[in-house]
Image (tube, rainbow, N blue to C red; front, side, top):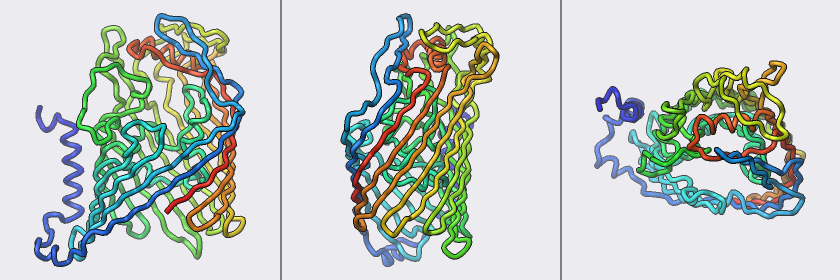
Length: 458
């Protein structure tokens, strides 16, 4: 295969060329001079652990499982009023830094994170391991680390405390959400800690730029690229040739007034196994596209932030399937599938906002609100479009027991609603029967959760 046709090779070449041009790598100092200036490696150790006590209630705890060729099945899922304990954010970071003064390569960093999350996948035992190269004109990160679409974004989620509010995944492990509703504060298709190349410019006059490339966001330090197994429900959220972009401004605009503004984006191709067919044709999905912008204004004692993001038709099935009539699920809202066109379905958009205030030097109060919406592609009998919507309200109070120890109490309210959830799932399974099954909840879920915890870090 020629160079022009090999997208992965071209992408890596572009990243490496950027490293070369921005770092003046070709003009590196002589090895003898670098050795003379080398101060030797420094070892750092940091970590955190949180113990949480959870309780809550949920309106609808049942889910329905649709399986190709078989009836629907009802099972129990969700939280109840019982108390539950958990260990969250348990991790230790090992770092080795070697500073090289007065050269184009100023220093390098090796970092590895060990996770104590017992619910994590195998690779998440070491979720992050990466090499950082700090050069005169750029910073390059190679390995498992969040992309600039995460690290350079600013908004309400940045101000959340306690377990992290709606920016944390901890509460969604305790709450059963409606299928098709989006409750994350990252762009859809975001590649988290997947193995990538990240290139960032220096910060000048408060402004910084960044870009990263991930060949396959399913992989975390692995060589394996292809798979012959059937696509899973989660595979739709993974991408090939995923690019992340970021630009932000962070600086003090007045005494004790700090402004952070960001624009971030992603672009990639949703993963689909070759054997997922619609008749004799391979199922095609719209590309991953997303952009977000936000800001945080920090007045020292109080701060507020807002972020919004839009994700086009990310991960929606291509093609006109107006003739497909998904099976009717008992109790579901009556829908008119004749009005369905794939072009009407869309990825989600969301907005989050938060206000933070220090009541005194040790006590911090944060109030946050999150809303998301996406067009399902289905219409009701009166012709009106049906949307999947999510509301999350978060309130937390954090008290600083000591410099490295915090205790907190935090409350959530969730409401997720998607009357078209059964039809979206069965429509997808009709087009891609290799999925075999997909679990979805009732068309509306509402829940409240309360968590009390203590966190120590060093």
